[in-house]
Length: 252
Image (cartoon, rainbow, N blue to C red; front, top):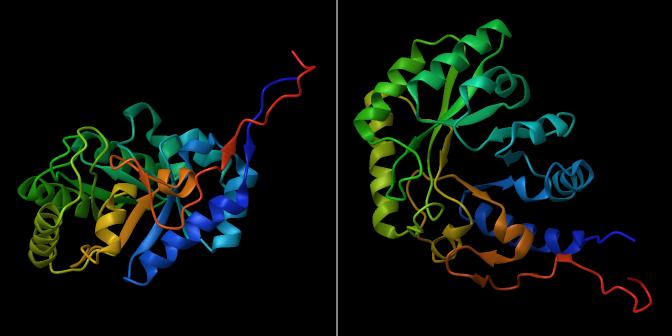
């Protein structure tokens, strides 16, 4: 007998519905980050269907390829490698970006495939994982607007991933100010303003995610019931969703 992990779908759904309802009550959509599941097609399909999800996110394009027949918008939530831009355009609807060279390559791949690839451009809010400041983002938007294969779908930010910088009213106000300046400069409202991940839950529940933020990307809190960095569950969370069953004594 090989070791196995029991996956408790009902507990995951409980967490997902709690967080999705909390987001929707505040005008925010929840995009499910699926990377912990390693391309588990059946589970992701069940979650999309049962929770009525519209977006799934992953950091591996090979997983998004597995999910192609699942009816949800698919996001690659990291900057694509230059060597994989063709697959990124083929198997993801949206990717997170902050590099001009990558955007240029995505545009070329999109034109070759006769597609429009959507991008969320990342704003640097202090965690130093990825992103640009306002003037740099303005230059990227202008470049993207000249690319026939690219659509600027939104602006995003990432916190609590590399340097454990927590979402706060201060850095979210900075993010909102940057978004407002860019929307005014380009005379349009971007459809998606993605303001963070599972670490944003305390601020979300305290009604601190205001302004233009209308999306959060969540994985750990959904699957493990845990708020990253704070390392504690949210109210009502189910934490025992992935369990090693106790082996019978006679098995070695």
